[in-house]
Length: 125
Length: 414
Ligand SMILES: Cc1ncc(COP(=O)(O)O)c(C=O)c1O
Image (cartoon, rainbow over all chains, first blue to last red; front, top):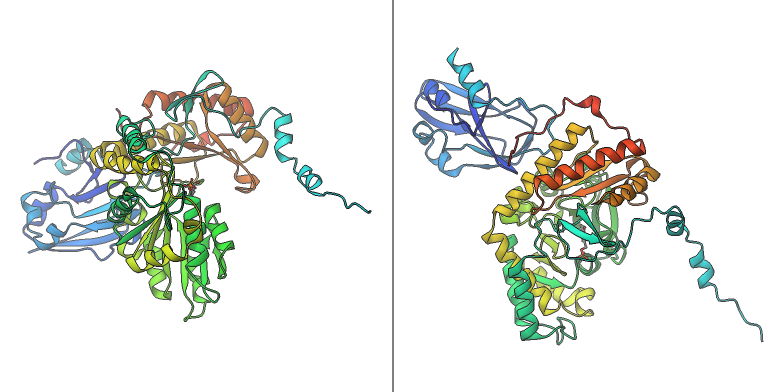
């Protein structure tokens, strides 16, 4: 399985790509395999400010559902329209199919994101 | 014949604030720069690191922009000798207006000669006697002055407090026009308007929104196109205004909105109709700056990397940075005299920052305003932060070093 080094990860199988102002978030290769064939994604909080660790939406697969949580406090400013139309694309290319775009806080008191190595260690347990 | 006394001079002499600071040798204003507005400037023959500029993208020295300004002088001369309304409209004014409209995602735009005049012109005419202008208490002076020229009632809500905004809107009559006027990025605190919440409240209470993007253009949003774009809420904002005196390397300002509103402003805004238009070189500079912003997107990226790097260093030093969300970093000193003293020591050591003291902010919120440019190097940022730390020790500014668990998100190493 692949865990690109330039991404950050959460214990909930989400990856986060931090750019200078924005972050893109999706689910990891491990996450999509555990879920199986994804059929729908529901993100009810567009343009809402959500606190860290707050529920932000869910991914529905044929036999399972994965809840998604905010990796840090911020506003969801975009939901990937391609991903909404064809959620199955997440299975094919989990690191390309971002799910949401979030504004990244400039000052954050606790950075709880995992590095690629830390996430790898977590899922290999 | 009895001669009355002339009173003006006596009145003026009552003002002693500036002379008092001058007497202490701490006067920090009107410092003459003997070079271009770059990351390093020359003051008093000495090299000084510039961390007090609003030229966020560092474009005032860009060769393409300087070239465009020179060419415009060659073609159109140095001035327009009149207002846009009468003889002062050039084809490049019209070109810049349509360029700006599409840049910020609105139907039309109108140029003014400064950002200050935008707010004076727009706010004085856009609402009427029984209407309401609703301001954030930290809005820029030009918004306050524009509202003074308006016949509408002016209401202020607590800074970026959306609950207070909602409470105040809920008390206003349904049939009145209600316009919320707010800075996109606040010029002293560096925080960003809570636009998603504001849009929801404005929808509920039938209020319109005008954003002053003076400090947001070139900084946030798609290709730096401002606050509405940053939140992906362009259609929910009625009027977007801005200035060319910061990221856009020139002088002048604009308002953008639907075609009908812009046409109204063209025939009602007195600071537009009765003041001469932007000179050709200034117009051409803005057009060229927009080209550069679009063709060199790495500048905005670098501005944000610099900002994150500075935040990281400052938090490690224990500086009190408040709630900033932008390249404007308020370093709180919370003491009037120490703020002036620190500014002076820093200039002596070759670092330019701006002191912000009362009445601009309450005395316990005195701060050094430290602003980043895309063209700063990490070495320059390190030098400035080190020197600020030294000066804070020397002036007895207490740092919050015990809070050293604080960390910025993301680490940029080059
Ligand atoms: C929020 C805001 N609006 C307007 C202005 C005025 O812009 P200008 O320098 O073009 O007059 C400024 C700049 O000081 C500002 O910070």
